[in-house]
Amino acid sequence: METSLNLRPPRSDRSFDDAAAAQMERIIADLGVMYQERNRALREVANAHHEALLRLALAAELRDDDTGVHIIRIGHLAEALALKCGEAPRFAQMLRHAAPMHDVGKIGVPDCVLKKPGTYTQEEREVMKRHPVIGAQILGRSRIPLFQLAAEVAMSHHERWDGTGYPLGLAREAIPISGRIVAVVDFFDALTMDRCYRKAYADDEALSMLAEQSGAAFDPRLVEQLLSNATEFIALRNRITDHPPSLESLAEAA
Image 1 (cartoon, rainbow, N blue to C red):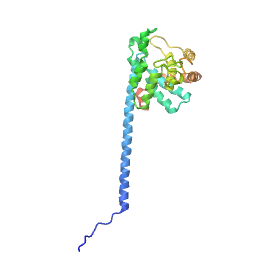
Image 2: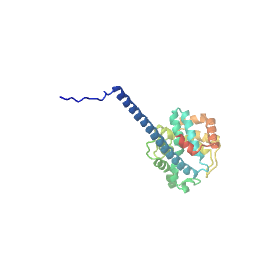
Image 3: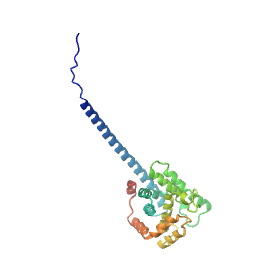
Image 4: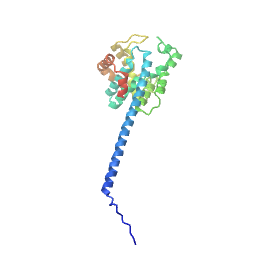
């Protein structure tokens, strides 16, 4: 009986294992590159989105401020106050990027209301009070944490500590800390800048007016921190006014 002979050399298990390991390393390396490219693309999309929203916020602000630097100051002042109050550095940094979009909803308020000198009628007041909701709608329901925080700020920065604010009538700690912080620094900064309907208040006047609203409009703990560190906050405000960063740099830093 004839028998066939297997003339192939026996397979080396070591060679097979080495080849499989090399192939797995290549797959892992390729996945790593794909992951990095994905993250880079997501960052670019997020930065582009952030820059677009900042420009929209600037468009709204320029209707009520000749320079638009107010929105940039608000971000830096909010970050500084958050840190003074013991908030985490990562949160404070995010707030610096989110806070400039706090009044983006003003883009939907007519000039006849936004720029009106003197007292609003009841109807005009109701129109003006829509801008937090408009802002939150513009910022949308994004899954990106920065935009979620910005929407929270837009919605809550006109709430008052005593519960008489708008649009939801929240009170005390029910108001997000982001909105409470931005409310304080926005009030102080806005008082110390020229508006189309009034001249800027002196720093000491603005600080006194802020103190008067402690426990009424504003969280007393936050007011105390700003008042106790007023010299530092004023220096920061002046530094940003003299050397404001570009919107592009703010968006890229996010």
